[in-house]
Image 1 (tube, helix red, strand yellow):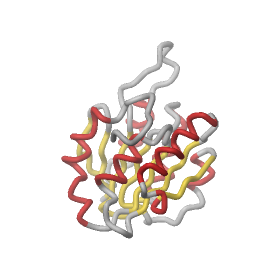
Image 2 (image 1 turned 60 degrees about the horizontal axis):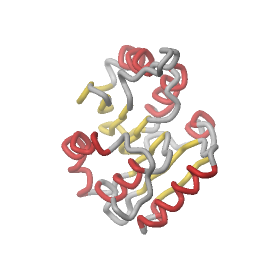
Image 3 (image 1 turned 90 degrees about the vertical axis):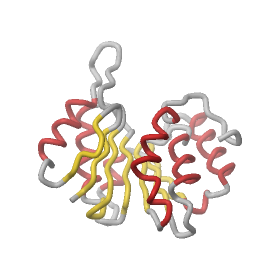
Image 4 (image 1 turned 120 degrees about the horizontal axis):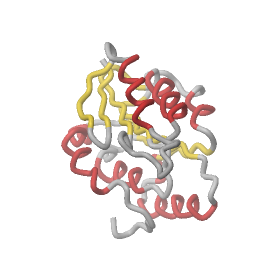
Amino acid sequence: MDKYEFTKDWFSNRESDWWESFGYLSAGTVHAMEIGSLEGRSAMWMLEHLLVQQESTLTCIDLFSNPVVEARFDTNLQASGKAHKVTKLSGPSWTHLRNLRPGQFDLIYIDGSHHGRDVLEDGVLSFRLVKPGGFLIFDDYPWRNEDHSVYPKDAIDAFLYLYRDDVRVLQKKWQVFLQKM
């Protein structure tokens, strides 16, 4: 990952969990989506490790509201040499998720807004987009901001309760890995 420019690293300490749970996907064509891309650290990891087959694709949804951060994402994407595999969607996730074809993704990584209502909505809207047998990943399960006004855990727990008959929990640590039944 030396060829990239990142100012933050919230992903590399999760790579071993991802590789252990999803590494085998690299043997086939994978269509993945990431909600919340920031500078692209997790996107670049997926491009380098999971989306290695020629037909594999990645859809990245982010507000891209900070031009400096968006430029860094774009620079990193160009450095990957795999920009042709990526569809970049700018704006709120709920506007894009409603317009995507159901069942088109093998893996969706939810790491956008951390406000409970947004996390729950991203989960519900993403669920229909994941193929049966595919994976949903929620990030920052136990995280709280300093004043405790932002807390994804409650929303993820609500999703797990509502979809308990439709998903299998593979991991429930800092990230929650689910497989759609």
